[in-house]
Length: 177
Length: 239
Image 1 (tube, rainbow over the protein chains, first blue to last red):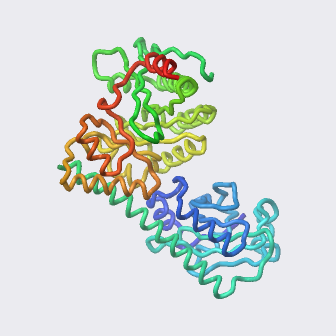
Image 2: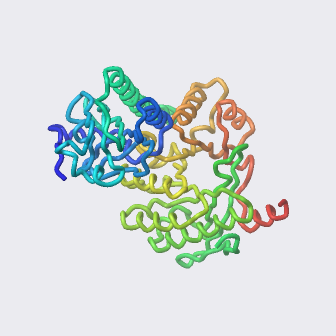
């Protein structure tokens, strides 16, 4: 399938890989956030999806077994084009998605909403809400909640990176003595 | 394989290897001990292992996996196995390694040693992720020495970090180093990583590390390495 790439895709992927988050183990807090998303929005699936060169990889997921998909089928390709929430109320009615294998096959996506997750000025992926039934677009209150939760995801990723870097530096301090 | 007997010796490259087991000290062990291999050589052990080819390394891996299964079946031991980084240097060999451990049903911790550099971050993290998916765990061995430098903490996603004794041996109660070590341990907790303090050889250091929140220790103060046969015999009698 064809999909749009952001103009800064190469730099974006470099930042994502430099971050060292791809293929890392499950994270308690991010797991809580996707769980909360399912509870708050009443959707079947929520993920923290990161868009790599050729795949979308899920750093956290609730309601979904797969740990990654090929990039070409990822709805999040559209979310990382801008800073706003990207929504598809009914994928079967949308020209870009109605033939998407994630729509025509499992998990049979009809509704999608994603808020971009940024790091170092680049949109690395999205906090996503997914359901197999079509839905009304998010209202203002729901949009605000999703944006806040995505901001918490961003902060968690930043803090964890700082932790890791601090640990390395602290170790150097002890070793030098 | 289950509880079937596995020879505690293996001949590799004309050299006899002895399997030893060193228990860890912990109230709630994530690993109960480490399988150690002692080659019957006069020179350096590291030089001997570096001289082996990939077939030898896989033979040692298979032997260790069988031993870990026997130790688990007979003594309930949760075993850690050392992996020489040469074994996982090439993509093809990593694939074979992952295939073999995926078939191994007893959970094992694979400790990656500092004597040879790890593969690059991305293939390494993919491998560590696959290890996790197979029900096993990975540990960064001897952290603070050799190649296990800064990027090992920032980029490589091990489940367990083993602090080399060089980071803890000179700790005193009031030192900045102790505050630093405590902070490191707290940060590991926050990242959901487990730890082992290696080479704990005095009661004083043990007490200091306990106060700093460390819970798992390895060292002669608690348990010296013993032959696998001896360990199993003793445990079988106790049971």
